Amino acid sequence: MSTLIYTESTLHPSQAIYDRTIPAGEGWMHEVKAGQTLRIVDLEGNQAADTLFYNAHDLSERYSAQDTIRTQSAIYLTTGTKLMSSEGNVLLRITADTCGRHDTLGGACAAESNQVRYSLDKRWMHSCRDTFLLQVLQWGRGATKADITHNINFFMNVPVTSDGGLSFEDGVSSGGRYVEMQAEMDVIALISNCPQLNNPCNAYNPTPVQVLIWE
Ligand SMILES: [Zn+2]
Image (cartoon, rainbow, N blue to C red; front, side, top):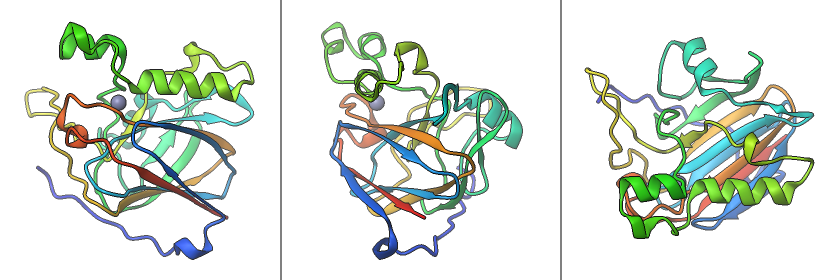
């Protein structure tokens, strides 16, 4: 594995204006205003936080993995990464990262992929795609299944091999590690705290994550 670079934040949790714990396997949807900083903390380690971002004023403009990868000429996300929108605008910029690497190639787990990857009887297990769907429908504002597109997997380790292979590996994160990003426009953040029990991305044991916001 290439060397991971860690960047600590100067923000203190006591000054956060928002602090919430997302239990294992549950979802969260919340607005982050331009200039605010969002931190996601992997409280117990080896958890995956599947995440989508939208322009808060137009949900049809959303996070684009393709534009993000092309803009930074790199496939992993870490400090300095600009999270790009489908319209070529910067949604947020990663400003601190004590995990060192995040995936945006692996996609979110879904009923269909659970069935194909693991076994027929896994189809009915909880999945990130179902969590995303539940959250956008509860959020309203006309959001639908079509608004759930390619996501970021914070804290997830999906290395790409030299011959182009993709593998889901044991996490590089551990308890208390975090990633922090500053919004460059008003955005809606949508997180599925991955309930997956069939692969090592969350050590077969989903655990809570914490979200904090600073002005
Ligand atoms: Zn998942």
